[in-house]
Image 1 (cartoon, rainbow, N blue to C red):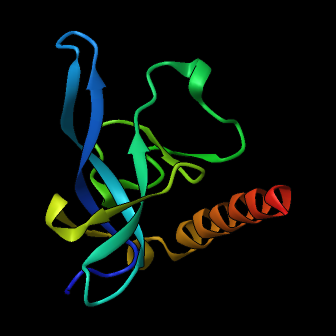
Image 2 (tube, one colour):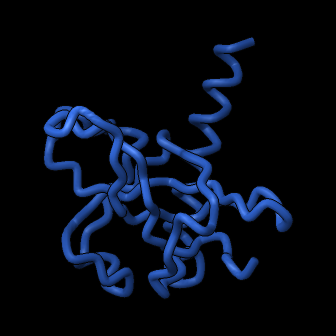
Length: 128
């Protein structure tokens, strides 16, 4: 597996299409925050979203990314990295974009991982 932590990738994501009344998929950008194992090719990914419905934005866990502040990400629009919405996907359901957030903006990557860790710790603490 050649995927690296911090890499931005297009991720095929399932969703329920209400117009067709069936499951469908769409491609969305995401950031790889973990490689589960080298034998099963699974990745832990945080989605990147433009969040047009502002009512769904979490003011703490959704990290706002502007094109002006982070031009090397080559994002077509300002967006949010959703640190509380991780998912596991197979590498075959992803496509490399050619940008690594961890190497381009290491401070931002650390901030994102800290929020992810905080959210995960909160979930675990509440479960116990």
